[in-house]
Image (cartoon, rainbow, N blue to C red; front, side, top):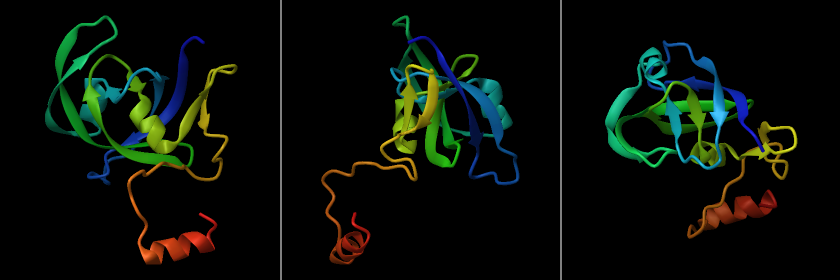
Length: 143
């Protein structure tokens, strides 16, 4: 399919006084997390939560800072996530993509909202039962 890149916006929801930044991200459906270079973590004043060991594409393992929270946005969709401080470019992995209900269009190599849910992100919450009140609201919404 080739490389897919897309503009996304990253922000620090704990620091509303700091402007969000628009970045060109490498979109990788085989990667799991959002990864940001150190200069992005510094610019957004992201707090280090802990260290994590990650395995990169060549199979090597590295201990890197895990920072957050991060507000990631694409178009009108957004999610809160953490990020690994790693590499020299932003990498958008499957967790934030799933959270925003985004897909990669292979033909055009574009990141896009899921065409099955164009108006709002959808998700699966298996194992959760709706309360009686929520079930009534869901029936009214044809949920």
